[in-house]
Image 1 (spheres, rainbow, N blue to C red):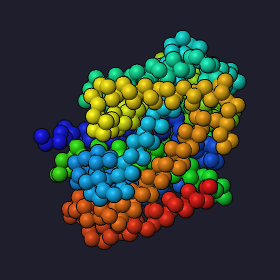
Image 2: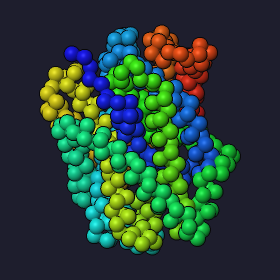
Image 3: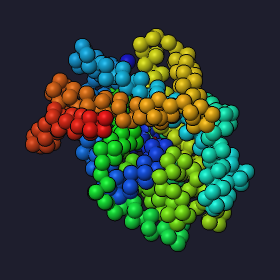
Image 4: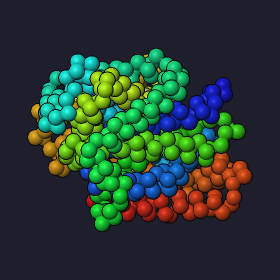
Length: 439
Ligand code: PHE
């Protein structure tokens, strides 16, 4: 049977962007940028997305289309030997990410409930900090919401309603953009907000450190859903006639635009209300309610914002669960339903200590980090960059003819040679160097 294909090029771009745009862009980007001093981080992040990000996304899509296979299968078809390890690593990382992603996804559901109750409608920074802190350190509530998010993800994957979600995305993504613009305008017109803008966009390169580089690298791969074979799988459904370069560029531009808007939505408000910019993972959840409190119909905006955030998170978590589920179907010969349930249950269980480590298990530290931060560290700063490093080597040294043929229709030889050189040496050297200095 021929491998099924995306209904249209737009469908492909939206699905890939749906996987990419999620909590990474809207929740993670603002606080990681804020803790890294703002402007310089933004520029380095953009630089990485448009160079390494673009080349690696193109490579993943090309590998998928050339082999018509998913993450593990693509490497097995082209090389065998040691290389399929990259695919296995990707599956493992998807599993690890999904566990804590679902915890944060649960927070968005909780904040929908809190918005409906009106319990977060205040602009008092102390009160909002206390509400968030009290909520995530509660031993029971976040787990219930984490379970709720895991069940939603499972329902989409088992119910086979991805198509429906894709159709929905066509409306949701523009809705999200419009809502963010409204919130940005409100935030920017608050007294003191402009200081936040200049913090966010004025690069102070004296703040660049090894830690910042590895944060930017990890966030770039995380927010673009790279290095785990997701774009390989998506590429395997793309028809021959479709141009990959344009699609990859679209996905990257939409994602970095979302990151930029999210930063502009959160950081000026942080300054206007006197929040601590380095507040960490709670930043979006404590800052945005203060903005809603200053809007007419603020409660309605709050509900809409957290609903859209939940849906953006779901289109990403679905892509994560899809990867581990397909792996279990192909390699462990399980039924689709059984595989999805098993994997969702597994990630739910791993998410429990992650969630509790933000409260009652906070004293239990490994390498100076709680379990939640440890999962984030191991995935974003170790395994994803390592996966990308290997992928670049694979493309440059092993699979180049295949990737070149996939991409080169009408493209100049020079550009293709540059890309090869980049994959063979520059990209691995850059990623390796950043990882090493960080350690
Ligand atoms: N890119 C998603 C986000 O930013 C998260 C994700 C990472 C999804 C890796 C798939 C793979 O929310």
